[in-house]
Image (cartoon, rainbow, N blue to C red):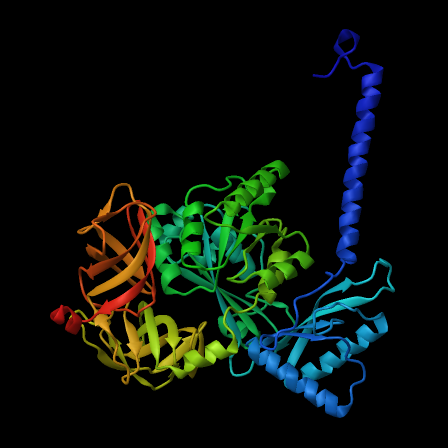
Length: 588
């Protein structure tokens, strides 16, 4: 309570004290803002960086000033190796010793070193972009010693750009499709959902404003780190031609009644990352927790975008951020939330963001005012791939295996299948076997043409998503969940399989005869529990090896594949431990 003077008004002393307090608060806020801006311009480098690794795409260089011709050739070869390790991207830390000690360089030496790095990049057909500079010594003036972080990215050749897939999750009406429309079209929203119209595939989606199917949108970055989207390019082909790095967004449904579509998108399309969109004015509500749990169960690294900050008060935004921080710090998550305020924060978040790391970046943004969108673009630009070149090469050496996720009939083309190449390489004109059919067999097909991101290509590599034209093949013979494999492969087709599971939630008990919808990769089918090894029944939180049987038709499964099953409120995760083929079943 505040003492009021005679007549119900403030006394003179109280008014002076209040005005002094208000001035002091304003002064403190102003100092904080000035200090924050000053820190952004003169951020201190850490005392130590992790020691340089022989493998990977990060290289430390103390100085690159006037190297001899022999030294320059060696440096260019080293850069080519780092680019290969990062699948077309490398990060150079200049002014840092190999043991991770930031020594720093003067402005003249830094300029000369960056100039040498630019010449090296030109020699190997790459471009460079300065990510950030940080001072090493305590001198905050312009003449202090600094270290620089430089991104080197190869200019695309033969359409072999780096492609990362990002699944977009979040509750209904959180602004997922609108955010993707703004990012990919390059125009801000009008506040009534105009930006999302280009993403919808069905009339009822346009009428209700709610996504019910899976759609794909692309955002490109060129070799200098500049955004390439539909604002300057008329077609997807132009975006692919000018981009060195491509982000493919998988827009998933937020409404609970479309949950099976969302789960299929997460399990089938193999996203590298997931972006959870949370509305600032509603906070953690609806399917938000469920989508976060799905991504964590499938071990998909997740970052968060808090949308609609333009229609929410600052207090409301801070309340939503506190909700998210509490949720991420819970024992089931054990994540460290990192709210991104500056470009330096975005760079640090992208480098610390990996499956093994526990950091979860949080962005606050608006699709109407554009606030925070630039920070999200910086983050996406330097987001590294999860797999290195060695893992990619090992997958490419295996036999061809393509997962069928979508089936289309295209006029003048015939039957077209869309999906992801799990292993091997696929060439135009190659003959493959597609199945399993209802009877468990495989059909011979020929790949007539291949398209990636709506652009024609002749060769598909492991991990890449594409559509394949199969000509006049009867579409009714195909279904989602099939695979196209090399004729040399002997695929293991099964009706029965065993899996080591953990029951996340069940209202009663999980026992023999229970029916669930099983998701294994691109396979989605009802399965019945045949037996629970060593137990009669399972309760929430318990683990066991369970034998399942598909009800409708046989499927192609791989040992070790992730399993996610659900039925009503029942949910569980696990992995396939044993595939029981027809021969195994007869013996059993």
